[in-house]
Amino acid sequence: MNGVCTWAAIGLIVAASTAGDILLSYAMKKVGDVGELWKRQGLLKVITRALTMPAFFLGLLAMALAFYSLLFALSWGDLSLVVPASASLTFVANAFAARIFLHERVGKRRLLAALLVAGGVALMAI
Amino acid sequence: MFSSAGDSLLARGMKDLGNVSLHNLSSLILAVINPWVASGILLLITFFACYMSALSWADLTYVLPATSLGYVLVALVARFAFQETITPARSLGIALITIGVGFVAAGPSLTQRKHAELPAAETVSPEARP
Image 1 (cartoon, chains in turn cyan, red):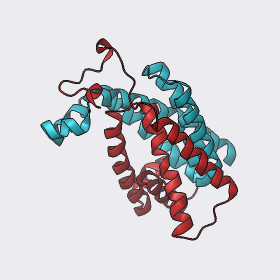
Image 2: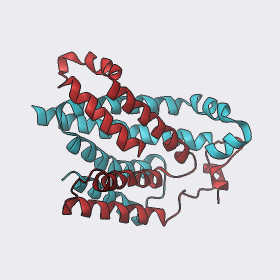
Image 3: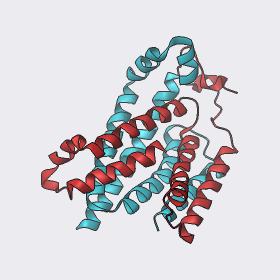
Image 4: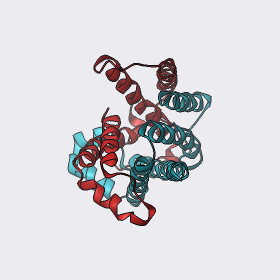
């Protein structure tokens, strides 16, 4: 039962955090360069601009779901399994999702980087 | 660093609370008043602000692998500050992450698009970054 609950929660973490990353990345590209915007118009403008984006709120909701799934998974499984497994699977899922939904140029370099990092994170748990 | 430290504090707090049953999910909401969980959340909020700033000028597939360097830093701190043993598998993991981050960092940080495809930033375009 512990194993099933842990892996179900890991699956939910991966799905929710991938959706959250995609939505937040989309929203922040719409906001514009935070550093430049902060210099020119102040921090309040940056925060206001981000908070008025529906995609930002949806992204936050997805991240909140991922966070509670993480708490749920941590209460059942070991940190050394839950965090590396969910992180490494999220790297790979994000590479494909960013290509499909954000139209990012995910060439061989970025795909290989995602796989290397995913493998590395998984090895760190051993 | 903020992300890894935050995750560790959350794990410490959730171990205090014990297993959360599917029939008692409300205890997950109450978990945020645990000091360890609350401290973890504070660190994760700091990480989130830095992460959002990076996403405003770089691709997700560039930022995400780059943040994984935190795992390497934590392993090095564990080795030199707490004299923990780094197994050969972990050393290989550190090497793979470092190579992966090096791969992605050597490429462009942002996908170049035609003007019509640009996000609707009013005054500052991420494309204007050098």
